[in-house]
Image (cartoon, rainbow, N blue to C red; front, side, top):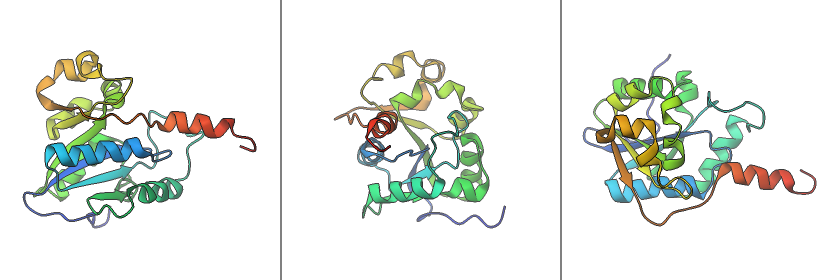
Length: 189
């Protein structure tokens, strides 16, 4: 790996949320999670880590990394606190645990928090070395429609409740799965 450049400002004491995902496609639910975390946790920035390929998702139906990055950039618009990045591709990182450790090693002056919607918390225990992720950084979970009970039921939050901050508020129902299904039903798709 060559010199790893930060996707945004990094300085001692900055609080940065890390929000990984396929962003296939990026949608208002992603923006909602990021902006809600900024407001309720007092984060300075959220780095939206557009994954080259989520190991838990099929390759079939996955838009190109370039298209997903473009969609995420369009979604965040001029919000300078939301930074879309393909830093995982630059690091050749396939797993969140490797990404988190690399970012903490390289940019250790910042304080990182892992962000996710409650829909992701339900299957977080399937992520490679998920307990190491929680040992490295605290996690914040923004409640999403259809998975508001995840913090009570999810294996990870039952085993390590002290590593999670649960954030509630107005809930955004947008879903990449639903968007892809709707587009597939459109004539000419």
